[in-house]
Image 1 (tube, rainbow, N blue to C red):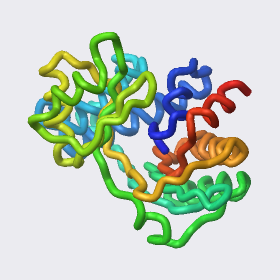
Image 2 (cartoon, rainbow, N blue to C red):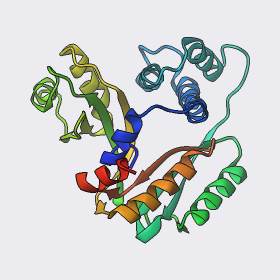
Image 3 (cartoon, helix red, strand yellow):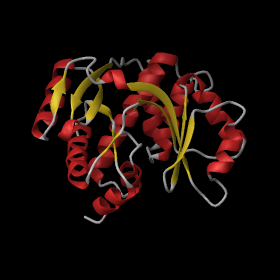
Length: 252
């Protein structure tokens, strides 16, 4: 899912209570630390770090936290950051496919927390490869719609660099591209004076499934439980829903 269902984009616009905000900040800081460790502290030469910092700023992550994360990740303050990325596969209610991305310094703890959240919320763990085959890495840039920013203006801005798709998601536009093109695409948007909310490499399913209200409610509960873990960085799924289903959930 990770921003691709209509429910997700609506949910991300709602106020975040303090406990959720703290967990969001922790995940954003991890992203910045890993990006700095991998590509260095210079954002001009490290587009992954640039995007991680941009996402932090858009989520109101304090400047001091960002600067400390960069220094810590790059080893400029004498400390060492050691995280490993682990991808788990599973099925949610009614067989919805899920990829669960963890960024952790303790593989056993991450595995235990993921398994507990999945089994407690009507899901099952899956063998490696049984789910991931239907997901592909894509660059996803989220642009907020405004009076002057719409599907046509975004398409015009990125036409020369090439994108795979531009989707209108109500109050957001989702620009999908090959991961290798993401820097070019977001640069083209900035050159055209179009701001963007986030730019991430995500896993998108080639086999999306529409779900009813009851299934959507159960899948969302599972995703919330997973995202509540400090070990889980992202959850990707193949579930989608109609505007009617999303509206029914929002009304609850």
